[in-house]
Image 1 (spheres, helix red, strand yellow):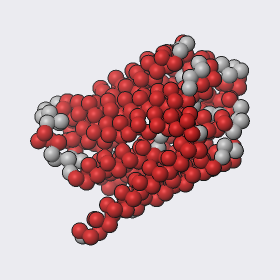
Image 2 (image 1 turned 90 degrees about the vertical axis):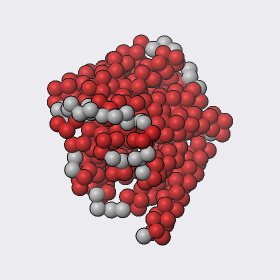
Image 3 (image 1 turned 90 degrees about the horizontal axis):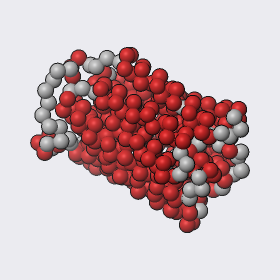
Amino acid sequence: MFMDISSEMIHSLLPLFLVGTLGTSTFVVGLIEGIAESTALIVKVFSGALSDYLGKRKALAVFGYSLGVLTKPLFAIATSSSIVFTARLLDRVGKGVRGAPRDALVADLTPPEIRGAAFGLRQSLDTVGALLGPLLAVGLMLLWANDYRAVFWVALIPGVVAVFLLLFGVNEPEQHIGEKRTNPIHRDNLQRLSKAYWWVVGIGAVFTLARFSEAFLVLRAQQGGIPIAYVPLVMVGMNLIYAISAYPFGKLSDRMKHSTLLALGLIVLVAADLVLATNDHWLTVAIGVSLWGLHMGMTQGLLATMVANAAPADLRGTAYGFFNLVSGIAMLIASGTAGLLWDLQGASFTFYAGAIFASLALVGVFLKARRTQSVS
């Protein structure tokens, strides 16, 4: 939660800082976001495999969170998009290092019958941080007359708190301490990852193609004439819906067929894209962003649960790593393409393209469900 406060204080303002202060094009913003987010997801494959090999999760998580904290000052002193890109890249490397071990740690500590609820709760707490971060950014921007750099410096504080909480407040699960492991990415181990797992990987990749960076939600809101200081409220609204819905839908996933809930989440994403494509009036943007947050609450914890359920316990870190590797490549393609479409064809075309990819993922879910029913 505290790290999300720190990160979102910066990320909710970063597209505006890049375009308005540093004069960066929308395509470059999309490229920076795509490379940064995909790097985080790709790094997870190595950190996840390493956590399986070592049988330890916490040390990697602490290193990843610490690296994220150390990048915050770079945003505050940035004078060019290349410095921002470097800071964003290193920040996302830190996220990648900590992500898979943290998710594997949650799965290790949680009984299977409440795993969906546990991931939903983790997602809710993450999103509470992502809600408070933009709120703080808005307040400080109003207080300090749109001083981006001052806000970026303040973002360092909750990041430091996050590292100390993890370092002194979380214990390594007993079953991992001192265990010796074989190479988790050896062919024999990878063959233990089932077809059900690889299906989750594939559908997650198509899903990511439809769900490009949220930086484009911020830019869409700005097109409607919302004052710069208030634009981060877009992320506040999205994360409020996300935080409220993640835990209830996580609990629901423990009792409901996963493919059905995933299909419903994709339908909501299609609706969000279509609404955001319609026009840039603030009310339209608010409705579209709310639907975006709802689909996140319905699906993000669910996908994490599906990976945990489909992978062997001793390969969970690796399983999350490969899931995020494929999703990372998809994120790079999605955000770069979204930025290019935005520059060439306009914002509406970008969101229509997102709706098409979400529809393709929806078709995949329905085909899988029909195939499963015919086999049974």
